Length: 293
Image (tube, rainbow, N blue to C red):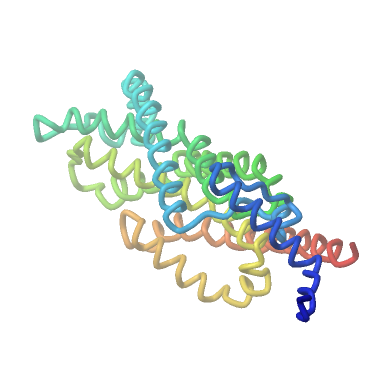
């Protein structure tokens, strides 16, 4: 007897393709071979840097910190070798105000040499440390933004050294002259070496860090996080914050020492407004070219 049922309908071609794709994926899964993904399958991959999870960011941060500390240890070791020469350089701003630096504890001698070595190491390692900072933030940058790596390293290092030199040649002599020769004119100074080098390191390294402000503003402007208008609009609040910071890091709260710290910071802030304007224009031009393209 003939079968009266109609023959099964022909399967659509799309289902056949789905079946083939499924079999291919199953084969790949069973073999353990990696799945290749082309650039066209990932939107924006050609433009954006690599994406990392939160834990990967933490691991990357740990890696950069460890490498920076290793560099600092090595450069500090070099500073330890030349500690006596560095001692004479850092002592020079005292001049004849204090004839002899003294120490009051047996361990002070080691502490003094260590501070001298680390201070030297910080400046010597600053290019490498800035490189680690760049390597940490670069995965989140567009490829066109990664071209600023060399300007970032050069300007950051130059400004850090410039800040240290400004502190050494301007702030330190004026501060020491005011504190010892003027305020302490009727007193006999007996300055310990530990206190003196604490004073010197805080001022020199602190001013080097303060001089990084234009670099920080440049990158925040490049990312569109701040604008020249925002910086100018909040100038009066910045002045207040600058004097608060100056009061914290300044060795004394008198107006003269506050001005030694606040003056350069205000000038750096004003210069940062110009830097922000330049980088904002570059960002807007790049966005306009993308829209036209």
